Every structure is written in structure tokens, then in C-alpha cells.
Image 1: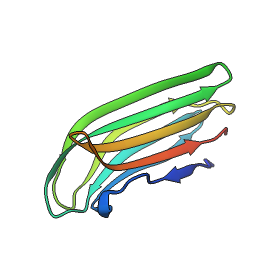
Image 2: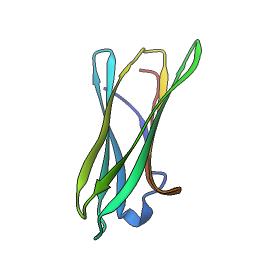
Image 3: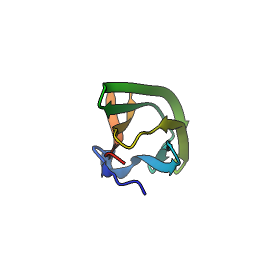
Image 4: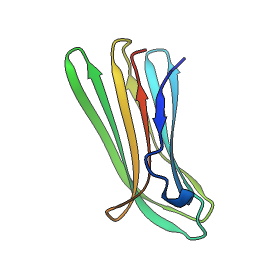
Length: 114
């Protein structure tokens, strides 16, 4: 079972929702990044996903980014990532959705030592 802290840093008037789903599969943490457009308009946004691993030997970071178009009411699967996990490490995950340079929605998770 994965225990984590979740924080919806910004959900711009709840019209745009960023969400991460995690699942543990043996020594892998599967992360799915998603977006839901609850507005009445089609939108063209970019996303940034960042994972920071903290271990006894230091920090490492991995990032992904891309652009997407979402129609009104549409849910979009943005990306999927598999992380090799170790019981002694902790992980910080951050998904941010932007319109140009304006943050529209974000979701963060902290996965403590497993």
C-alpha cells in the first residue's frame, strides 16, 4: 500500500483539473498524469511533470513536458511513467498545467519511504 500526501496547489476556479494516479507494482511506482477540462471552451495548454527522488546518496530529478488540446468536458491522459522504487527513498511528484506562462492547475504528491 502506498501512503502519500496530496496537495492541489491550484485548480483555477475548478474549471481545469490536474490529477496524478499512482499504483505500486512490485519495485515499480506507476504514475499516470491526467487533465480534465471542465470549462465550456476548448483549451490548448502545456504540462510539466517533475519527479524528485531523495535517497541516501542524494537527489535525482526526472521531468517530462508536452502540449495538448482538450475540448469542453474532455479528460486527457497526458503521460505515464514508471519509477524504480527503493524502500529507503522518498519521492516528490509535481504536475503543472500552463496557458503560456500562467499556471492553470497543478497537483503534487509526496511518497514517503515505503
